[in-house]
Image 1 (tube, rainbow, N blue to C red):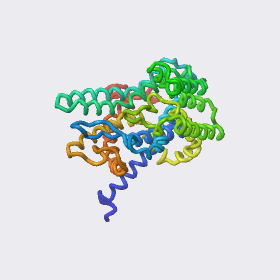
Image 2 (cartoon, rainbow, N blue to C red; image 1 turned 135 degrees about the vertical axis):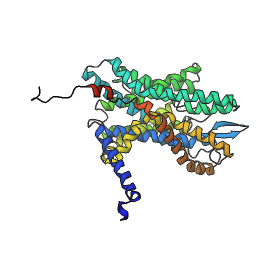
Image 3 (cartoon, one colour; image 1 turned 45 degrees about the horizontal axis):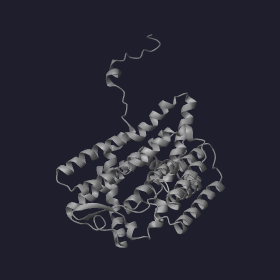
Length: 403
């Protein structure tokens, strides 16, 4: 009797809805799509989000929120950043996807302008919502008497992901020019720029920003080579993994580069932006590891639940990346009304802070889920629905007998 009550049927309805969603996502994914690339993109985005949440702290000090990092006073978590700072894998996946998409567009006879417009629209459409929200939020906070230092910290943190999208957009636009470029050329540029900056202490200060394009062009061109059918062998992946790891260890141990691949506020050298030679070699190791995992990821995504989870992350990839720091900033600012909370507003100067921060991760995830629910439609674009007016005024279909 109880099996047929509404309360007993509710869990079954939820399971049926989940199964239906999995089938829809599976059907919507083209058979020709490389699911390993989607899995790598999903893992890299989640790794970057988790890494940022663990190494970014907004500390309540002197009546304002100020950005600090546990990596400044605690060197032991630095090796973890070699894995979680997976921006190189995102550029690897971006180069692969853009190269294949351009080839397919050319095969259909589409123009370069039409292809680029479609790629950049999906990539940059969510930016407008983020910029508009934080423009209004910053104005309201300042007018409400919030300290300017707090507003600066919040806005700087929330808008920090924009640089990645701008660089990826520029490399996407240059895809026809760089699809056959060897990764050794941009790697040589990064090597010479760092030699001038840190080895010889020569050149203007802006010279390091040359690496912003050259450094991320290395994994992007690796992705293009992967799309062309190169880098298939396990040996090539092992060379990237072992060679990149050895080079990074040498640069950190003997050349004086910081051990943390994540940026540290007020640090003498910041690896990711603009990328240093050590950041690029660490990225080569990450790309080698990603290429080694291709077959395992394809087998894992053969299972419908895993495939659906990967598809869900990829459908909102840009939104997740753009809004994850907003989720952190909003949680921290809101929590300040309850006082200084450990792991949220306290100084990240002990392992106990890391334990408290781990406990806050589900709260950040919930805040990010709310951001996704509110803004993910900006990434997917407006849904086109058939016009009811047109449908109602269409003449009825006549059978051959009546015709």
